Structure formats: structure tokens, C-alpha cells
Length: 78
Image (cartoon, rainbow, N blue to C red; front, top):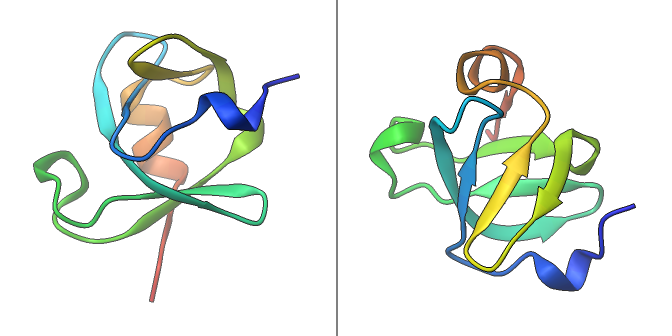
């Protein structure tokens, strides 16, 4: 299980293929809200479930899904 205190604001979120998914804005409930001001996110807030997180290292949040799979399944915040 992931220690949520390891996930910090502005950390890069990457897919299992190393591709850029976005940057952490904050954690809301059981999801990570990605920063709106990020080219990878199309300048919109997106939400990804914490269950997708495989591990966290010093500067990145690593997902169990590839970049393309994560972007195909993330939720757009309205």
C-alpha cells in the first residue's frame, strides 16, 4: 500500500512506460487531482484513482498503467 504522505504537490506523474501523465495538484478523497497548468493534461484538471499508483520515489509518482492507458481512463474535473 502506498504511503500518501510520499505524494507531494508538483511531483511528476508517469506511466509504467515512463511517459509523462501530469503533475500532482493535490489528493482529493481517493484520487490524485492533476495540475491544470500542464501541457500533458491539455490545461484541464484530471482525476486519477490512487489505486493506479504502483510506487512513489523521490520526485515521481509511478503508475501501474501506461501513459496512454491512464489518459484514456482518467476523469476530467468539471
